[in-house]
Image (cartoon, rainbow over all chains, first blue to last red; front, side):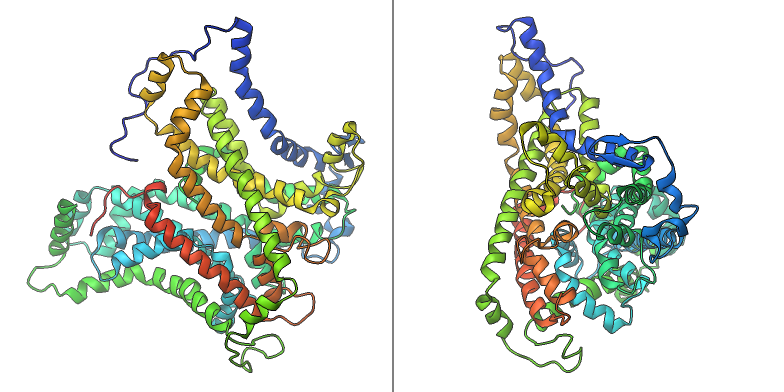
Length: 304
Length: 325
């Protein structure tokens, strides 16, 4: 927010209509409908893709957009009778994969939240040498494409003995999310009035106690927003587990979908779509519930 | 700023009796809070940058193992300039970045302008829809496009173009670039869209009001007011996305994987990935791959630095309300 910009809703009076007096009424109406039509046309591919994803798992076969045959739950039998699904025969079972994905997403979120709020608090409140430099490098790293470091990260993980382990991938993922997380949390700590904290400190509470008991509850909206972002990002992650956990002992759902996807061009879309929808469902639910939050935090500058 | 500083000092003094406070004690607290972040940044940003640069001067590969490698100076970089596929891949990379960038920025701008010109709630719904590809798992998003591009009778693209006399085909094989652009175009557009939208919303309403009173049309308002005021956000999105696109390869890896012909859609970052981490030929060449990645790392660092200094990066992303120095 720039301080010099006038608030955008200075008056409640509706905007005067656009210049249209020269046009007949029907033309003016058409002009008003035009942006809607163009938007709809541009957005159509996205609508088609997601519409197809949501219904095509419930039919034996879908050709283009047209379902062939009657409604069925056959494609979902991987949930109750996985052994009967030929495509899943030599793949890890779905429930452990789901748990791995959940553990990965939750652990990443926890690490990102804890480490970001600790560093964010220090950067917002404490004086120490190198503070400005660190803030600068956080911003630098935020726009730096971390994916270019994967080859060297492989070596680091080998050295640390964390290669091919979920823990290693969690740490890498959390580290990559950290620059944004620290920046967001610092911003939230900056808005917390100092007086509350000072009262606690004067009462003899230590810094750490004050941070945890007094300040952290006040930045809950920030923790929620960052947690949401980190969870979505962790749940969706494909590349890091794919590269750093080749043996697949702790694989996540993205690996399964990728494996099914890679089985050739004439795959049975029924099962593939059901597994894909199963994987994306929690994200779609989150999206419906916390749409505003997500829009705001993605608009706040996230890697694109 | 000064006020805040005083408060911070007052607080620090209040924490312990002023007489006994040693500055080492204050730094101990800072070290506690900063420690985990410093460790993670050192292990997964600083060390990898140094290792990438160092490794690019070695012949490290599966054949040498992680211990029997040797320094080879700038051999890897020389090999890069001599390589018979270097020019092809460089050309691919530029083609990919330029076209995807154009789609991303134009679509982002278009959606931002249109969605702020319609009913607020409807505009919000459209923006939310455009965010969907970004928040969906890349494998599921790719799965949807794989279906869309599938051979008859499955793919929807074939169904849509059939009335125009286009013969049905498996689009990923027949027109791999088209699919790469569509996939990346629809994902990347939301980045610009969100930044442009918040920029448009922060333009004082009085400007639009005055323009309308003066009888300006929607197009004139966009052209004379909105677009000039979006100059900086547009430059920012252009720079930021150029760099991300040079480094990105996830969606290409998941669809064409550089194919279908030899290096047909291989881009630089995917080449580095294939060379060092996922070679068809069994021998993973870490040294050579690191040299290929080092080019991107150095570019990434330079562009990030430019973003930080010139585009006042912190003004454009969520910025802190106060700065305590």
